[in-house]
Image (cartoon, rainbow, N blue to C red; front, top):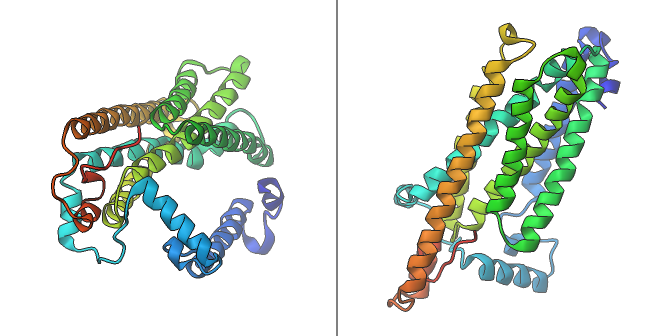
Length: 303
């Protein structure tokens, strides 16, 4: 598609790369606006489900994550209480560390590939296979994670793949090894874009109750995406064609995500063990347990 749009170069006075942003940007905006009308906030609000289907989905979510408490409005005190839990802060760094290499690749992979001696159209065409491989790998990781009901290993493994890709890019650079460098881009894309959805899913699945899930997920995604600011300044023209600083920065942030994931794992294992040793019946009402969310003594975190 990029190749076809790139041939619009000069049409109405715009370069081909501008048409790519214009056409894809318009499509993104149209689809996003349609979601406002078609995507329900909660299963019970889905008009395209039958009454039995809505009840089933709601019951299934309640088994997985407990009662939501969505009917109670979120207050400033609720927000502050969520941030008292250090696990929430750590989860933000899990995602933040992956956004830098992911955005760095998305922004600068065409420039990196172009340095391999391709034309503008060839560059766009060669940028497609790594994305396709990342999609297939992400689906495989998602299937394995869901099948085993486990998240940590399926986050760490893609991160390791991403690290391997950046290590190759840092160590290898000459015309005789262009295919090796190109293969390393596959590893970077596959690793970064497969690990991101796992850490987001992992954290959100471990947030019980509507309040904690809404605030926690907003924090993780909102703070994490600020990593894009770093990515923009990681790959500078003066560092071309090797981009040693850019690769090094991305590698460091993947390691940050890996360390944060390890800390998060240890924290939830510790919390589960404490709750297993403690009495479950401590006189809390169902309403109080709902308000506590994953902090309830009955709640167990998914590893």
